[in-house]
Image (cartoon, rainbow, N blue to C red):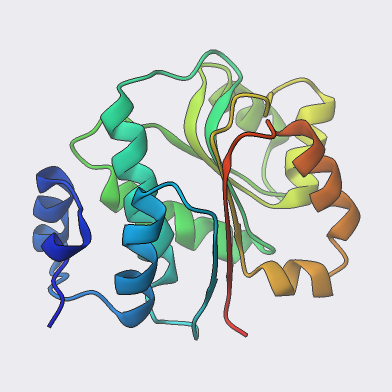
Length: 189
């Protein structure tokens, strides 16, 4: 049976997983984590509730924590896009448990919340930004955040974002990102 240690995760991440009670990786985690740690782009398909957030979140946290870099003001180092506020909140909550004990800063931006508060939260720079596409573009237009230094792009529930008509927003966002980045697509179908 595969363990999280077999996947190449750092001792710090393994300690966090132990505290969280994670014992063995799910199939999507066992397949995705080593590929992501090696820097590969990935398309991951797995049903809801199978640990997709950990499959992309754990290697993302490990790589960002390992390089020791700090984000410049109003910049991000990684971008995770999701179609709904609820999913953005859930992803951000999970990531916050993974980054305990690291200096990594996670922010989230969604419609229906104060855009002024979100602008202030982005001022000092963000390691991992979790966002809905529409609100992210609003913040880009306000020059509250710049995407040109992001090393990672994750599209979670990518098929749902396309079904909801976010194709033009996604194209606009991708044009603002550097060409050299790791790109991850995750979907439940």
